[in-house]
Image (tube, rainbow, N blue to C red; front, side, top):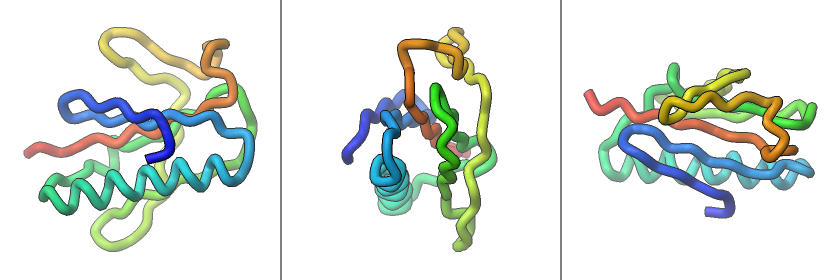
Length: 107
C-alpha cells in the first residue's frame, strides 16, 4: 500500500495527495489491493456506497471498482459525514487530496 488507509468497522478510506497521473494510478492500485483482500477473506464491497472525493484540485481522475465481474466508475461526492463530522472539498488542510471510500456489506 502506497497511501494512507483508515479502516473502522465497515468503512475503509484511502487518502492521497494527487499531483500527477502516477499518484492517481497508485491510489487506484491501493483500491484494487483492498478489493483483492476482501475477496480473499470472503468480504463483499458494496459498490453503491463506494465513493471518491476530490479536494483542492481539478484533475479529471476516475477510479474503478469491480462489481460482479465488471468495472464500475466510483461515484463522486462533494460532502461526507465521518464520526459526526462533515468533510467537504473546501477544507484547506486537505489541499490537492483525493479520498476513496470503500464500504463493506456485512449482510
